[in-house]
Length: 153
Image (cartoon, rainbow, N blue to C red; front, side):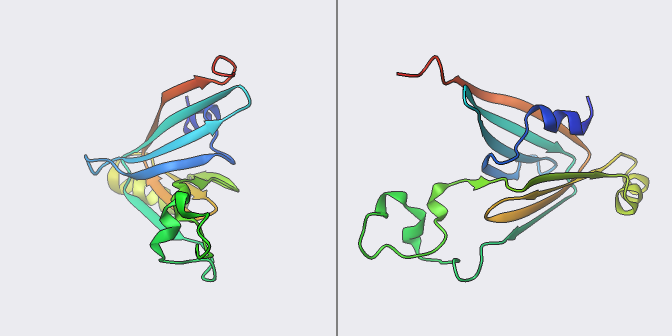
């Protein structure tokens, strides 16, 4: 299965990233996504294997960027002096407009010659940040699947 087919099988478009970062092995980069459909919800682990570059950039507009710690705590929203700004406490970012996978660019071909492995580039844009990863392979695993129809009241 190609990288694109793997990503299409568990499409993160307009879904949530709830956690991301390098794994303990410092070779692989992990993204934990929450995919919600009408009938199910899945927590998905994406492991970008052989990640040689991770570029993270916050894109929250300066007018909405606040370091007030109250914005980390959703339970405080009802307070009369709750600050205005981006609410970091939702603890996820929405992947919109989504992901762009690139392969066979001059940069990636040069990396392939240098390292002896095929490389890919993925650009992920969310409502809070942009993330670019250069990686060799991708493993995807469903960590949790909830059937909403079975759990409906």
